[in-house]
Image (tube, rainbow, N blue to C red):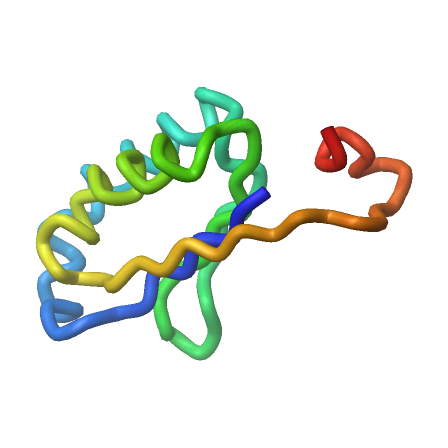
Length: 95
């Protein structure tokens, strides 16, 4: 399981230019079943994603393909989490 932090960077002001493509990238991640949760970092710091079911290398390639990352709107950090205990509803994360 991974947490991807997408923190605004020097080109933050150009976010609106790439918002459509960034949202399409998010939709692909959700449709592929890799992104479990997508949301905003508050207050207006960027975004965060909880991802699962993909290798670190594949996830990093996916993150690098985000138009916000490619155009320097956000800086991405991928954190790997090895779940030890989970709520029963999230047992699939232990696999």
